Image (tube, rainbow, N blue to C red):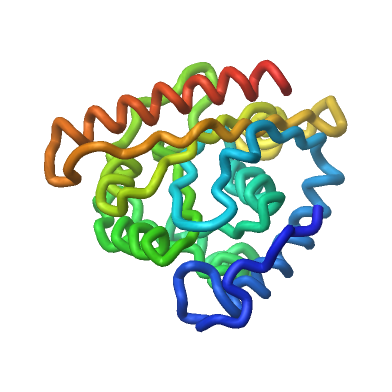
Length: 233
């Protein structure tokens, strides 16, 4: 699954869009983790053409496993794109995981603090032309139904004017659900990842009604993609 292009290669490494050495480290992590996931899961992707080949966008995915960002990133990689995800700040303190998060310049989120600094960092990355990723649900669920959507995704989209790409995930919770690693058959669970048509933001980030309306649109589109992924897993 070789990336089609190296976005921003040769640019300023401090560029939040994914240039220079950040992309090089992304490739290191992508190929090491990617090989492991290819061995552990049967990965199926749908709607990859909905991932922009260039320019900023927000990938909004449902949250059924702590491994969700990995399969979203592997899908985006097939379009030659790397992704900057919101990740819980404590994960950056873990030896191996933290190393990968720091090297690929993922964005720390402080749990329960309404971290506006993190949202601004995501918005800055998108304005600079990067793909960013987060789950509007906020926490890992059991997959029976979408949890209520938090407003961060809509605020970021309205602040940047960038499209939101809903991403439905299904199947990875067979191996790593909310409770943790599960070593049960099948040996290689099928994991389906469905990228939906873009949700174009409309309104003002300072308007509560506009934020709520966009949140509802995002969650509705996300629900459609979850059902599509479920049907293909």
